[in-house]
Length: 157
Image 1: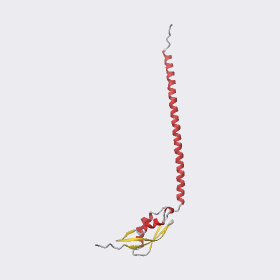
Image 2: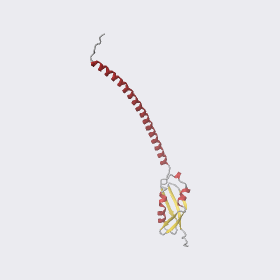
Image 3: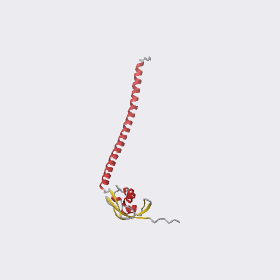
Image 4: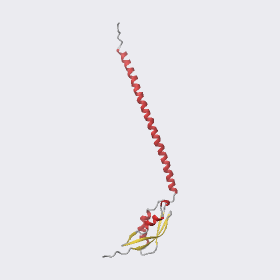
């Protein structure tokens, strides 16, 4: 039996074709895995987008509801005649009144506003004075009527 030698390029071509076929199979499997991962990430991104859109609609609805509720727009402090002029008393109470601005009326109670001002001690000039609330209206235009009386001086011992 005699074996003939075929030219070497035929073996190389067959080896190249076999290698290309195997490489194509491996690459096809990896491409398929990448496509599956891409589909999974797209589904996750879509879920996040729908959640973000829903939350945006919910926030718009809540903002609209909040804008429909009346809130404190102004706070007017009136001082009954007393030992101190009204202007410094109003100036001393203004930071507390400003804290009420923008608060929804249904979240404020008259008791809370009353206790915010009643019994408060303020320094006006060189003296200390106690504030007493005489009348109170909690509304978009809140009204507070107060009196002022000096604190009894401390007795030196």
